[in-house]
Image (tube, rainbow, N blue to C red; front, side, top):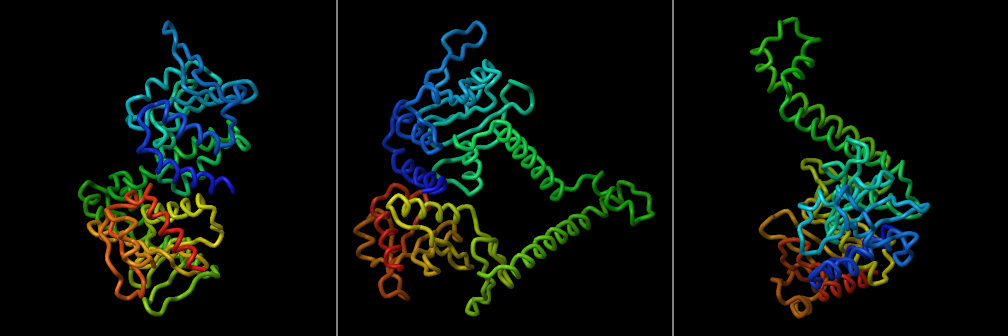
Length: 378
């Protein structure tokens, strides 16, 4: 399996294990060490990873960081571990002390085996930044999370490139926040800058206030034009674009999709459900090369060779559900704690009501349902 498949498999395994872990040592052995192994590190080789690594700071002696990852006989990453049941947000300062003791260490990770916070020293050399450059949940990985983690693989680890990437992530995120705020609430200076070239009127406070709603509308229109043009150019070049006459929608698989009269946006929750199903099938040893998804107005479909075998609906916050092709009686016997009903339009189908995709993680019965639906889709 490639890295993406391995990390998704681990994601699924951790979701299953987490409720059975009660302390920090169990967290290390069941959650964190497997994570390091997926990254390609030999956890049993002290030339690569040293546990309880000395990190004395000033007069304070006996300070030890849980793990130090080595390359070329020098520490390159510090990892501070907490119990899976512990909130890691209050432990940044502890990791910062360790970080400051080793000038050669430029990367630090704080984790409870589920939540991971990645730090560096962009603001001041050898002083850990107050905020992480990335924070993720290993049981709910997005494609961008997997891309970040792939840069920490032993085989491709390059400190300078990773620091440059971290810098780009931080600045891009900050600029994105700034632009979002600027576009939602344009400042007086920004409005003056926009209108100065086409208005001979002296730009007073009253003029700025008069133009504010006009500028907001113009920004919205400009963004819509840019998105529409980008999607149009992309759609005209895609071979997997097709028109569904029944729903009168334009579907572009694995990209943003648009409906002629209503926009389709693939949400993070929908992508999380796809990654969850993919992780289950990968852990069961299934060939997932033909696994895909198709987003429509009514359903988020998990497909195999274009044939759907599971459908999710997350549109109604109070009534989310998943549709399977498994008989109702079988579903109720497998996951009896959840409300389910027969599907009248499907000869042998059922609908399972959930609060979120997390409800289904770790359920052996649902693993069987997914695997059976996938096998029957051939």
